[in-house]
Length: 195
Image (cartoon, rainbow, N blue to C red; front, side):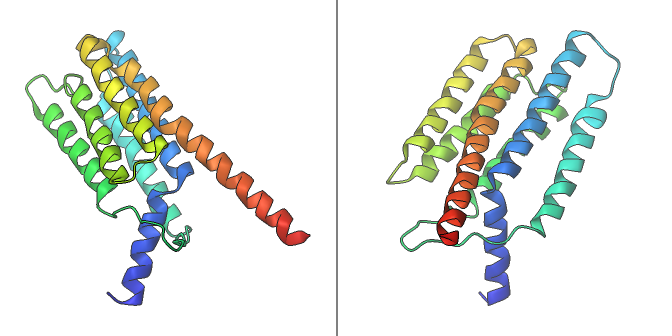
């Protein structure tokens, strides 16, 4: 692998580890689920596939591509185990396959597959922990398992609203906390350099 390819790979990995970007994607997905819930509940005649999901995900993807040109690769500390560059794209791919399968069915509904889709990130966090699981990863894995179990108990037509809460709780809040911690660490390092 040449230097340019290695640089691009580290840049993609850095983008996937950016808590602000991941948190914003979580907010976008939570917003889409919430709007879909209200459109279904009040029988609003709107093509949600295009006007809610399609436009939101398209604009978020464009913003992600633009941001990928601005993000510098994260430096890897000695002894630090890098996340496999395949894990989270594979998770997104599996969830996308579930979405396509659910939307291509006769009733064009993904609500029946939502609990199964919550199992995918849970298993990914378990895999990411590997031999030395961190507490945060195990809490995330347990949270996604708990969310899947809860969604199995909720009637299918009511699953989108709780899923919004799950996305905010398990994606947005941890990413916001990690982003704030990173900013605090940077401020402390800058103060130490100025002394």
